Length: 276
Image (cartoon, rainbow, N blue to C red; front, side, top):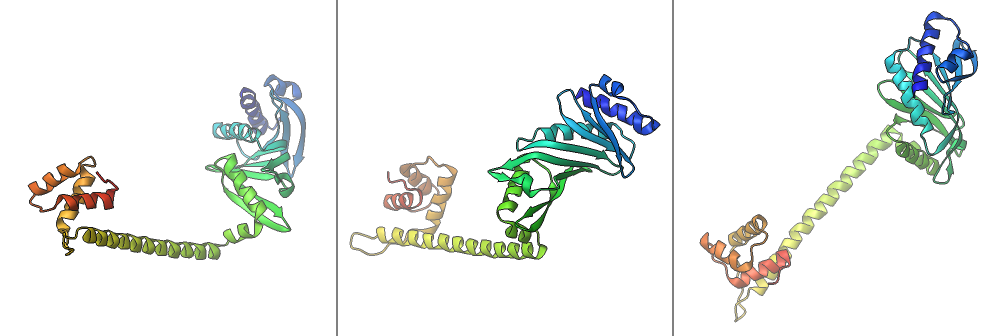
């Protein structure tokens, strides 16, 4: 980008002194002047750098180091897109923002001709960060896409989503629709949470029923395990996952709990799928 930096420095002189440098001076900075013209009182210079990348530059305010850095970053960014070939790149540095207009020669992704859907090109702005703001025309519907630019892939995914389902995209931009959808999601989440809690309760009931049933005496009478002992066993198992059943029985008895080897075996089987 050495050529871009030097070229921008020359443009500062142009804007400040209101003089015109010829092609020879631009070539000294590694750039070739392809033409100059004025639009709405703004002088625009078309340039080509040493890597063959062409762009149009204009400014209606003083240009400093920050603006130079933005110009360099944008040129690298846009010409680095894998999804498009550039037909025209225009950068205009303003007092409050830098606008970037990209007109692609080819622009496609996942088999979709995005260039056909963006006849006016793709517009970026830089204020505190790089943003995009442009329109797509899909099946007679005008879709406005705007947001913060993060990566090419994320932008392309949004473009493709809008191209494939423009109606849903329009709905997603409606504040009332988004609020309604959020409320629906909250209700679905609450219902799922309630189902999960009910499932956990039911699972515990089944475990307790099996534990009591399998813990019957020789003559078939029911024996209910000490709930405090069961709770303490689960705590110890979490604290010391490798604790075997014999050691667990010794630990519980040392803490004053009365629990049989059969009960410990059943708890290990039901809660931890350990059968030894």
